[in-house]
Length: 303
Image (tube, rainbow, N blue to C red; front, side, top):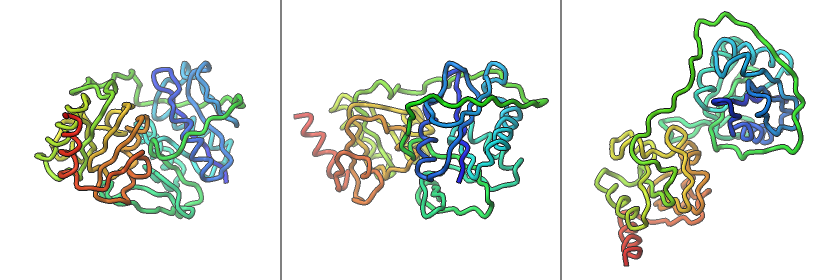
């Protein structure tokens, strides 16, 4: 089996996610090649063929032009899997490539199960395994779902080119204004998940964060419910944090949330479900009702 991994360049810099693409290829046992539209001074440490197009000639992103570059590389590699990161780049480009190839496309893959692709469903509450019927499949993989793999050598550069008469012109990238607190600088983050139950119980999370001199974070369901503002969301669609201590309160551990806190030092999880996925990454899992446990923990730190 062969895979073509689509790396990304953002604002002239190679995005770290290329190593997770390589990790995915390792899990599938596929023979991997990579495509990058990037800068020649920013190349991945990838042990294999790297189909390369210079960003100075092809731009950081243009949907038609970059689609054609991917199709050129596919024509050279003949891969079974075409793999993007589940980012704005992948969200936009993967369906275009799949439509051009008339093949299946699976989004937000978080694992492999008996040859099928595991994805979230029911607003992240459940997981399902998808087995496409087409020989070739276009995928996007969730950030943080696959352990990164970096090679030790230099990639084998293979230039790739394409042309297009684009109807869309890329003007540039502007980061969004920061809403609320910058959680990336906090040494301690205490995050509230769906398991806190209601808006009033978020106060217990606030009290613990204050006792520890930390900041309050949130999972997406808490933000969607309006219990905390979006600026405190941790995850692939929120902030990526790396505090010395991360306390997950009532958070099940969806891969989208794990992607935002994977750089944390010590992870403490409080959950009533001892089998919650958060337990797989937590250094310490406390199986308890957080309404009872958090006030006790807060009192100890206030003493």
